[in-house]
Image (cartoon, rainbow, N blue to C red; front, side):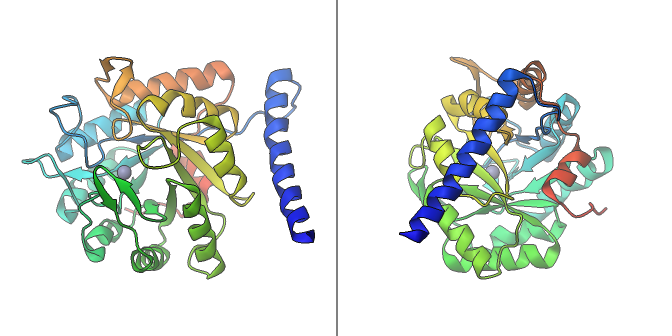
Amino acid sequence: MIRNYSNFRSRYSKFQLILGHLLETVTQKGDEPMDKVIITAAITGSRITRDIAPYIPYTPEEIIQSSIGCWNAGASIVHIHVRDPETGLGTQDLELFRQVVGPLREKTDLVLCLTTSGIAGRNLPIEARLVSLELKPELASFDAGSINLGGGVFSNPPEFLDAAAEMMKKRGVKPEIEIFDSGMITTALRMRDEGKLVEPLHFQFVLGTPWGAPATPKSLLHLYEHIPENSTWSVIGIGKGHLPMSMMGLIMGGHIRVGMEDNIYYKQGVLAKSNAQFVERIVRIAQVYGRDVASPNEARAILGLRKREG
Ligand code: ZN
């Protein structure tokens, strides 16, 4: 009973935090400016091909140009997958990652978040998935459990999670813990208790996949209630969940991911022509709302990232 009461208390205090944040916004009485919002652009992913999304970047040069466009529009992080330029399919080819990462480090101060998911459903061997960590990105995706995805299983068994966490720790890469459903938070917290993940944790809620947690305010609040209070978090709304979840992220004090990996329509029936379009829109909305957008270096400070190399 006592334990239940303390759980209730901690949930209640989180609810108060959200309420306080909302009230402060609504009444405009807060003396402190609102925390800055970090915009991540997910440039291409590994699944969506040009037959349905003709403007999606494939080649390293296209990925670089699209990332620079997002940076100019206000994104401070780019989430990077690479594609086999001939087939257009996602790949974990280290050379292709290198061709993207090198020029982006030279030409921009973007925070780079490289994928370790490989090709969801095709389930590459562990070593192949972790190859992107050789480039020591400041952030890398960490999918905290398995889930049905794209007609197959996106497999993230314990041995993969242990290997990924260990290598990220060794290379100074902060895991961006992708949460598709609430059990994945349980997994992440257990790994924290075992010393494999280190606080403060950074979560990315992926809402609205056809097999995971839905892209609804209630769903986001439920997940938010279960992460430690000193965590940072961002939200992705897949497909038609994109804008509603971005709005929720904005008002709840979280961060936001946009881009063609998650959503290819700018609005109903209209394909986005670039990733920058999504960034421009959310920056506009954030400005009107009164939450400033974080620069890459501000994002580094907010997320507690190590100083970038190279
Ligand atoms: Zn991804």
